[in-house]
Length: 135
Image 1: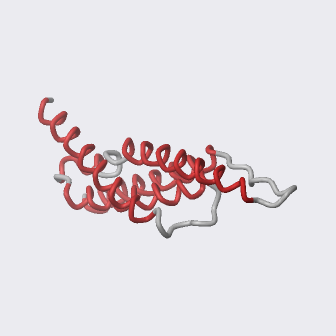
Image 2 (image 1 turned 180 degrees about the horizontal axis):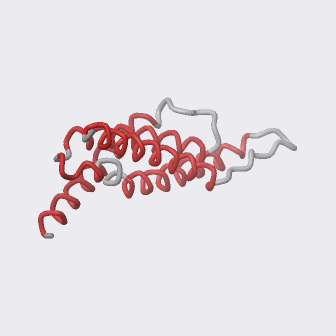
């Protein structure tokens, strides 16, 4: 049990670093004109997929199921972090908007659903990989 906790803590910590680094790079050029939640979903979703692929190759074969699950907490943290950062910038830019022009509505639930879609996709790929490996 202790080994599982050590491996889990290490993998979550490593994936947090991977997602933080990849999302920091991505935020400069991914979905720049999108509302904050959509931009955060794209940024953290792509970073999540990179971290899940990294985990798929780094995880021991006995822990195949952990590869898409380990980066989930880090991806959710990245989503909330970038959404708040992008929202602050989005609202700050509204002061220069012409009279009568309002900001587009930004629904955080849509961005979170996009991120959960990427997580579901990675989990499905891991399950299929495991199934086909043991046929």
